[in-house]
Length: 404
Image (cartoon, rainbow, N blue to C red):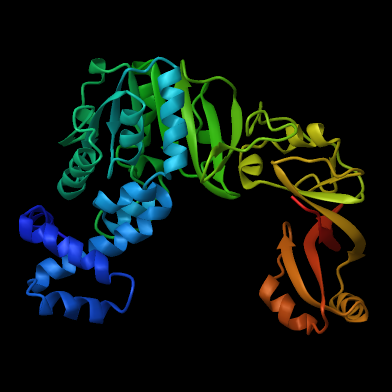
């Protein structure tokens, strides 16, 4: 879609095309396009309307019912913050006293809309004209145009003295190609500008990729990794007055906010990120930590909560004598610990009539699907196989999962 097609969707004919597209979207695209053309919708407008209808359908997982009235680009939707994450970020900014916020590189407005709903006045800046126009339209559709306004321009030129908080989500894909950018100084805006914001604005938050190198974390900043329903979705840097702890792992549910439970601390695990967990032998229960815990370097803190140990200092599986409830790790009961041998493993599973296996791995070069084929499983029983290392030696653990 280009800007001209987007403008056309805002005409009465465009609105009718969007309504018609919503009724036929989700099926065969050629049939849907033919249906719109037979209804008299011009080909270009029909294509734009069908694209929006499909993107809105896909966006419902991130934005809920609000997606029905929003506008999206494919790249923008892929990179947009999930609703539950954006809401939590907005609440944290508001609780810190942020009343006016610059969203530098606001994209389609996911974070800005959440902040506006929290009562924060947001000034969005977006370099791409089409994306900026869509963000403004999304603010209008949400009834938040008085709290979230968008200007198309260079984020580095925005006068941050106008606001008491800044949120920045630097573009990590090359414009026009969508290819990932791995050099932080090639981000838009560049990394040195982003990190300098913390020196200029008392409340600065930055969305970053979950694979962020810890060496890039500015001194004094809090680095947080966030998972939603077990999927690691993003990392964020909280700078200046927003920084509370060196490292944080936050677990959220798509519906209903933070995870709770024993040792959950409202779904958050915090620490210094530099502690080391004790190492020992495998024990009766294996804990597979959430990816947010692993990426935040908080495995040692979780080990302390669970009275657990590692079996290899470089592999983030924890082992304990008790199955302690925790939202931060999945727990499995270990029935067998074997030095890895395909022949021996196959014979054992055949003897136990195991026909279905879940395969987990850390620290193993084996390909799970190839191993599954090589095992030649047959039977009605099920098991979990964990491919790992124990004291440096390739090992397979045969396990059974415990109830969550």
